[in-house]
Image 1 (cartoon, one colour):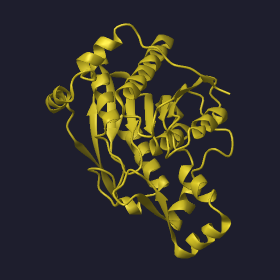
Image 2: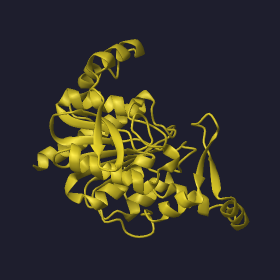
Image 3: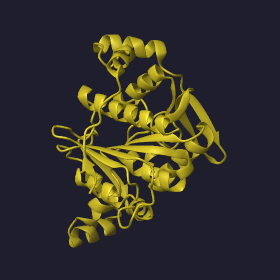
Image 4: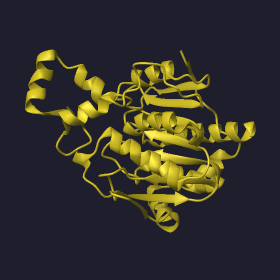
Length: 290
């Protein structure tokens, strides 16, 4: 079992956070964002939808943020990470999956495999050298798939409320009769507080395709440092999923960080500080090893 621990920040990080605007009032933070935010660019792909992204050039290891399902690259965690990476001079990339945010495509037509290909394209074409992948919810599942497929491009992983296998395990947890009824109907609605409708709707084809990308049924061949942050009050993705990930990855360097009052989005100021501290500690570790 991986240790439950809290990572401390390097000396001077608090000052960096203040400079980056994380400790500033919201109005000042928004003004800083308008002045310094990276510009949106679009990556064209043959026969595939264009992907929208924002990129900072800088030192290695770089940081890549992978958002959750239905989210985009303009969330609080993604914006805070850009400010943090700018303050340290490290490269940073955030982007929208196919059918999300400013990227082309239709969300309802996407699959876990579609979004895995998006992540691999970004790593192959838009980054240089090994990256720290920071995955939120669905992004925590995709970061595992990317690390398996591109170990040479993965310096470390930071999962935030990682949703590994979640669509599949949630469906399979339903009573057998319910599953049969949904299969006959051809679609399934997963309750969610994060949409106006109150649920996400998935086709049976989506779920069958997602089964091809499940990772929790066997050892996960990932050997880089892994940090898993999860809120004990997460009502969307159970925190024990992060425990399962920690038990199955082969890396000898795995920490689980549990937030007693943390909820799914982990977007409170203290949640974001913890995320930044964790990444800062990894950067320190990785650059010291070099």
